[in-house]
Structure formats: C-alpha cells, structure tokens
Length: 360
Image 1: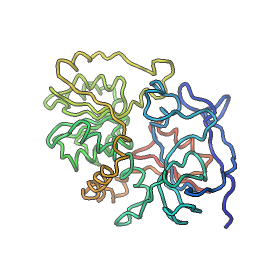
Image 2: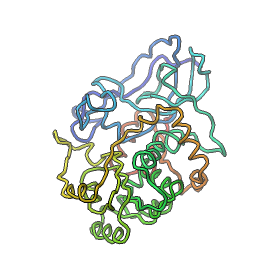
Image 3: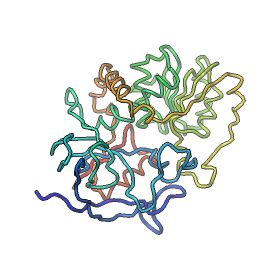
Image 4: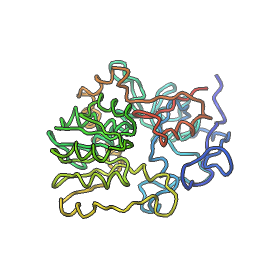
C-alpha cells in the first residue's frame, strides 16, 4: 500500500465570536487538502484512528482570558485545528516507534500527520480486552483531570459531600466514579441537563442527580443539601451554576475550578460573565476556590503512573463492563465529519467522553 503524500484537514480560518461554524458565510473552519512534509530523522508518519473532543479546544481559539495568561498558545488563523488522539504509525524515522505501533499524540483535525516522535506517547493494549479508547478518556487526560482535581486540588476525603456539575460529561462522569469508588464520599450529588442523563449519572455512582433545567432545580438543590452542605464542589460549567453552589457550601468548603463551558461560546469582551450574588459567602464560610489545568500533572510521568495505577487497581473499570455504563460516546465519521461531531459537545448530545472514530 502506497504511503499518503497528502492529507484532508480542517483549518481554523478565523477565531470565532460565539459558537464556531464550519459552513455558510465566514465559517470558523474550512476544509482543505494539504501536502504532507517529507519525513525527517526523529519523525513519524501517522494515521489518525480516534480523536478526542474536548470543550477546552474552544478556549484555544479565542480565549476568555488574554493569550499571555492562557495555559496554551492560541491557535493561529490558517492553522490546522488542534486536537489529540490515537494514531497508527505508518512509517517511522525514529528508534522510538515501529510501523504498525499505536500512539497517543497531537493529531489535529487531520487524516494524516508527520509528527516529531517525542510528541507521541506509545500506548499498549489494555488488560481484559478494554477498548483502546480508554487511553483517551478514562485513562487519559479526562480521567486524570477528575482524579487530580478531586484528590490533589481540593483534597476530597472519605465521608464528605461532593457535588459535580456537568456530571454526565466526560470529566464530570469520571469525577462521579472517582468520588464514589476511590474517595468513598459520604454523598455524591451530580448536576446534569436532562432526566435521562441524571438517571445515568446515578447508575454510575451518584446518590442523586439533579436536572438543572427543571423548574424546581433550586428547590431540589436546597432540599438535597439542607442536612448535608457541600464540602467539595467540582465545577465544570462556571457562571450562574457556580454562584448557586456558593450558597450551599459548608464551612471551609473547597471548589475545584475545572471548566467554564457555560461561557465558552458567549460573545462579547466579558465572555458571558455573571454577577456573583453569593460572593460574600466565600468570606463568611471561609471557602477556598482553586483553578487548575490537567497539564500541571500530565507532564509528570510519576503522577501519570500514580493515576493510571489507581484506576486499574479500583473497581471503576470492572463497572464499565456493562455496555450501558460505557464511559465513551464514540461517533464514527469521515474526516469531513470532524467539526460536526465536535460541536455535539455544546448541544448536550453525549454522555461520557465524546470520541470521533475516523473512517475512510
């Protein structure tokens, strides 16, 4: 089989204001076919097999904070849209990889790539026939975000009441599992956007899950936390939800600031900012709010191994053997379908980790 010399890919044509687009007038993303560069020493030619879809990718295009204060360099107009995923090595000019080997690295929204081998991490088959997609979600950056956010950032402890917003999403659902199975929280309360999602969140470990779109949500939240105030809040959405939770925190409560998806597609210079009416309670209840980024931990090999072993030693993976408890929503599609699948993140159309399986 002849090796590819060109690749189909999606470029970011312009930084979006509001929800990104891939069709119509002045789209955010444009589809092109580009020549692949020649393979140099220390590089590998790879084919993308599975692609991670993450809300954080939206912040890499036009950040809610100045670029100089962001944790990554913003994507430049005309560049291939950035993403990570699982690749198959088609040709290697590096001693670190052999042809046919699998790796995890910066695939971008591109069918093929020539990458520096040092940017790709080799991956091996997982035990008990566990699907390779777990390298992206459960045992990847998603799982690591939930693990270190709860354990290192806010020091969640056995017996505490832990609330998790975005609990049906990738990081949120892993936080539910970790709170239940590793931390052994006294109560795990999830927040999700439909009754169906709430029942799934309860199935994977939450004691109760509240639908934030319900007209009785605020009353339900008050009732649920009346006799057990929130010790730890794992925040994936920011905005008004964060403000509401501040009003139900226990003395010396801790908040892990993981994401702010409610603001990612807001237009305007304030990025959908809200007035924090419960701000004074941060003082009176002696609350601690701490932001974090998973890259603070992911680049430390010892911490990566600690996380992986903790998950493998737990009963989290065995609980995922039931197909209805799968941690992934895998959507098959061609390279042309990549932005359509990614935008599902902002429609609330998935449970767990959203992954694109690339097909010819």
